[in-house]
Image (cartoon, rainbow, N blue to C red; front, side, top):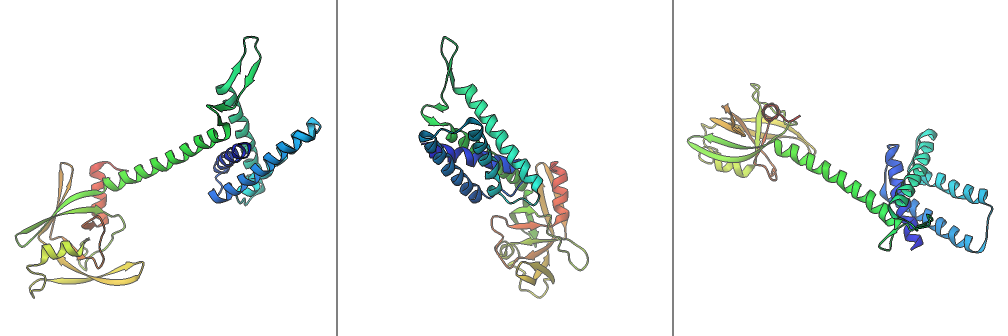
Length: 277
């Protein structure tokens, strides 16, 4: 229990200290350093059962180990950053010790306090680790929800019209889509299945104009076929943006959960209409 207590507290406080100085927080490195701290802490506690050291030497050993652990927990480009990390680590030790004392101290009627750093037999180190893990996961969750909200804010319902046929699609306004035709019209990239449903009646006829546009991807440069449809309606809440003679490119790959990737000019309009920063 002493080993688990030391490991949990060291891991949590080292993580907080490294994050405080904006260091490179690699969890495996922090875990190994906490393991070292737990071995030293438990070993020293067993040593103290058989040997008594003068109080100044005892304090020196404890704080020397505390100052040393952050050195292994992260890489530091400047000595100043390492010193600040060590100070932060010791500061968090004092802060959590004070908090646990305030929460779990028991005082007798005579005024003497019996301090127990446990809640329902749970070691204090695990309490600290649980608190830091909760904060860590909360930050990750907030970032995920924030990013998801931004994605949803750029998702809209689209209706495409071509030769009397209309097809509904789920569109995503991508600020990175800067494709244009030769005459400067922005190109919306459609999933192949959607394009076949919409253009099937005139896709292979000679009177259906087609233009090839170069596209840069992670796999290199390629060309996509771009067709002109009568219009495309983009719904943003109660507002409807109508694009006449819209240029639609057929994607060579599936677009995932979206049917149409709208160009950046459309994305800016949707962002403004929805008030998303």
